[in-house]
Length: 635
Image (cartoon, rainbow, N blue to C red):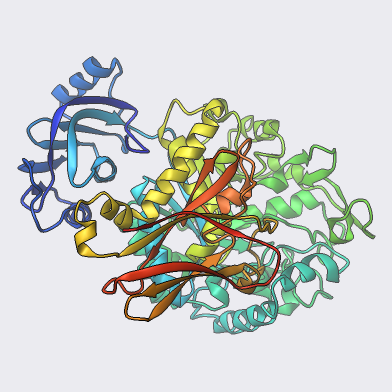
């Protein structure tokens, strides 16, 4: 059964193979290429489907069949699709996007090119199913595209890309020059950004996004290519251009525009200075030219330096905030673009301990330490701006875990709401809350766009987990453990598809060893941490050792054993979501064996042409930890 099996599904008797001889009838080069890549040049042993056809229409007889088979009316949703497999394969939808999702379902349900006969109908739970990412460094452009292929395979339809200083600005090249210098300085050591944010100055600062573009920037042509790659795969691309707050990239070349004149690393511009908008609008113009977006997210989160400078002092915080938003909205609206913000500064929010958050008036303490930190002053409230900003402002609501009732403030005023910083595995009351008209969720990555970071920060797991929530109307909180376990298996299957398919082949023994599968664990325990905003993975801390592969010709090779990368602690909790499990999801499949958790992982054999004589463990440290190997399989 596929992880995202259609909600309405009827299995029929029998099935056939899809092969290179199957005729593909479609107007979409993307669909045609996806199917061609999925079949081998050799024909399987068995009967094959003569054709697979994609029809951009849902005829009356197919609508009637949906109604009769599933007792539901076909929903005129642009992303809905029907799959009817009898003697041949037919896929129906009103749009090319819907046909693409039907194609992805066929690929997910295909095993060794075999597809069972079926009648299926599906449509998404919500209209926004997205991820937020930084621009990649130049060397990681290929992985960016691989990641896009992954999310579209699981039927995501939105990607939000933070631009900041990581894209070339032809009008203002000094932004890029200063951005590179700034990132180099902030990357002096892992966590310097946290020292700057929390321990250096007597005022609150925004989180520092030096991992955007991996501390450099891409040319406009490179960014345009990435945007087009996304759009060709039916992703709505939202450009994120931080403004008002998170504006270090804008202010480093123009310190005269900073709200705090004594801040050497300014992050907030003065909204009373017209020149702030001259710079911002120049940047917006270039972003618009490259992205051609329908929506721009203008940020406005973590806005801390409020009414500080001589021009702003004495003004009401909510009016400063609202007027800035309205000014930018007006500029974008004149260009046919809608505006989105991170919405927490519009909320009079309090955490579970009664401490003010978001847009509430707030006492500030050094290092956010409410008990022992030095008192820094009062941050004025901005939440009243919720009644001053236009109602067509789109809200990214990332306080969904602070207090479920907070979103009522947005619903009561008719704002369009999407959950931001979305983490489905931690979300509660999904069915009830999404029924209020929330558009969906956008999962956020705040680290460099590398596979290792996405895995260890739990991003890949959350993408997989939320895919189920986004496409399963029956999903509810009681399914948490089931979906967690299924998401772990599917993520592992996606990562190691070629090896796992090879393991099922009857020719493995004859072909030699391409892969080495290991089931292992350790009693070493390193507390979980997130790697983002300038906190880097310090690989030496996580290297536990190597598997030494010895070949019959006397040569050898080493396969790394990395805590958090492909192995973790044996004593983890399965009662609730444990970050140590999520951290290794994708490269491994965590498995419970009695009271012990093992981690199945697959290595590519460095020398498949050679015969393996033996495999041994070599620890990299003399510390008191053990690596336990339960099984080794040559594939």
